[in-house]
Length: 322
Image 1 (cartoon, rainbow, N blue to C red):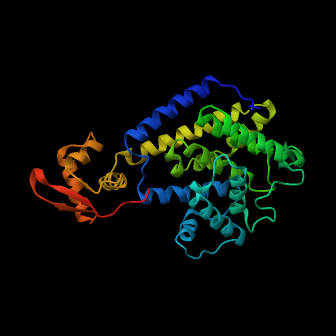
Image 2 (image 1 turned 45 degrees about the vertical axis):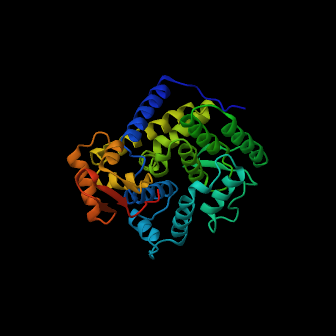
């Protein structure tokens, strides 16, 4: 059964805006981020997603753990980060439409933190804010059937990926299939859904904006609960995605630097090429700028050079794994 929601003018406007920004991202080759930027964004993703759940570690401490260094902090918080690092490093190994894969991801995130890691809950749960019960999840005996239906929707629905990712996130939060780790799993699986069509989302930390707008995040969940439709949450999440893309496009004015262009070009698999080949990829580049890029590539020992003048050819010495 299709989960209920309405397509509002706001949703249409946000989808149009996101689509336009994704076009700019592709046109400017921003879907191939430099290794340093990828690492920074992965750190932001993990930090923000865990911070929402109360983790106390800083970005600096997470960076240290990512570099296999020791940090001082609560044992549970350190374990949460180490688990998240492993799971996000293997993000592409999880199968989008597989419930078993979904449960394995939860096991990876919650292993050593709760006894029921990787298993649906077998007891009732509710979400309490202060002295008020915000949400009572469906009975535990219904969880397997509800999750099977949700994965059926994800696999069979022909709706836009942007919409499906938001709907899945909300419906999973509503079902609350685990005793703990539901928030993390909702955000993680939405990322997996998005990258199935838009690779840029693998390293786009939209969790940072969720962390900064937690009040609105929980309000949109609550309003969707009360209305019986995920419409409000879809509007919220699409707005977050739209703003995250704006931040990416505004990053350092988001003009690609020479090293970004070189890394992107080499990642395309070119082993021997000419300056013209390079300019065919970066069509707005002047001849002088292309020459400077290639000269820098030689200086950084990314490229070798053979021939002179119009017979010059460049040979890639390192193929970047993206």
